[in-house]
Length: 198
Image 1 (cartoon, helix red, strand yellow):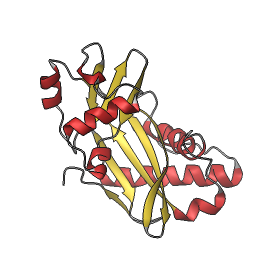
Image 2 (tube, rainbow, N blue to C red):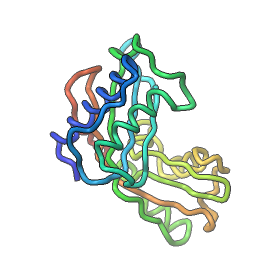
Image 3 (cartoon, helix red, strand yellow):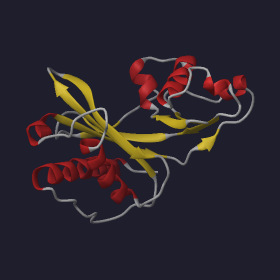
């Protein structure tokens, strides 16, 4: 899907896009392209050696070439995540960038029990679409928060603004996808591929 070298390049591109936008209001152009893919950029803020979410935005579907999508998602995560104020230049040296490259989502079909049994923690991200909206959780989220499959399903419902048992309703569409995740070890530090299943 994406090599370690390409992943490190994408993380550095995300950081460069945000730094250039925050300091100069410039949107950089990609110098190369990888094939289209869904992608999310997560930005964490380091405070006293602890990471706190600072922004996360992306595109679940492969609507543009990957480098262009990373630039757009990184700037949006820094400036437009409605949960947080825009990133300012004083924060740049304390931010850690993470890029998740997604496979195309596939619908999980069957009875509620069959749907639940098709989900593997540490491998699958989830999307829930129901009558009033949708929500997405990346595969690293249940790993980081220690959720089992039932907690994961309840929380994807919450992310979609739905009751915790909305996934049991077969009118609700449940999708899974996988992601290759690359992250800085420290602000501006080396980039590593995360082992979600480990």
